[in-house]
Length: 383
Image 1 (tube, rainbow, N blue to C red):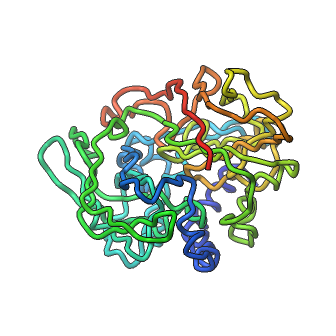
Image 2: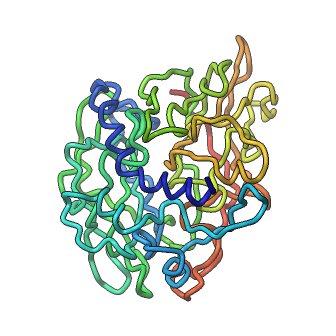
Image 3: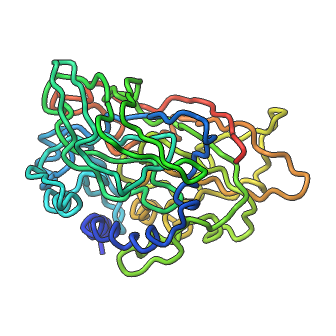
């Protein structure tokens, strides 16, 4: 099976993958539902951490010809025989798959739409989710409402995730307009750590992630004692190669993890996924500024269930869950120094991309400049 076929099958399974996660979500207790990666105080006011101008025109792409014409991200993928084959971004699903994902929300046009993932400081109460509660204001004066909100927070739909809602609609991707702000204009509810609910209505985001040309940003990093609470612990036919994907699947000696929350789904280039051995993406130091020893930093998780592959073809075919969470798996013995800061390196060989990729659109529309992640440092909080 070629890499392209493997990815096409995975894309076609996405709507069903979300359905397969429903039993795990329904089984979660209220405390577990509230216990996502960002564990703020019950007294902290909720906020929108980011709204990414994520994929202009590239939600609902019939094929490679349209992807090229519309300026969508196209990547050369290595095949088993050493040749390369062009494919478009992992999130650039076909219109029929978008309609399946958005079924029941009244979306009629699923071709060439815009996407902006919205990340909150608290998990979303999925019973209150409604696409019409999300409103974009564009630089040309238009205000448009989202037409689809991906159910259950997919792809970040595990019970210990669900802070990010991917929304689809007209966010100006086919025009010269930019996005000025994203507002919550309906009674969308968020879940506090103590299990109570708080309304997100009235929250506004007008920050840098709204620029189509801006790249991936690490929003939050938290040190946690390892636990499988809230993890999807079985794969099944539809989730084969994806779940379970927690630290102890590939690194059984894990004692802790740094739980990372990003402003969007991340990969090498918008298509080819990171693999569990990519510890070179980050520099982790303790409170004294000393880098954690390699023996303590085991690898990455919350990707796929398979171990690190060998060779370019296997790497290019690696299947991951495609969400905006990433775990750094740690082995910290008694008395070991704890991580205090994570630096996202973002060098020439350690770029991090969202689905829109790293290059400007080829048709003159947004993004109008090449994108790159920029090195930045985030303090590691303790949960």
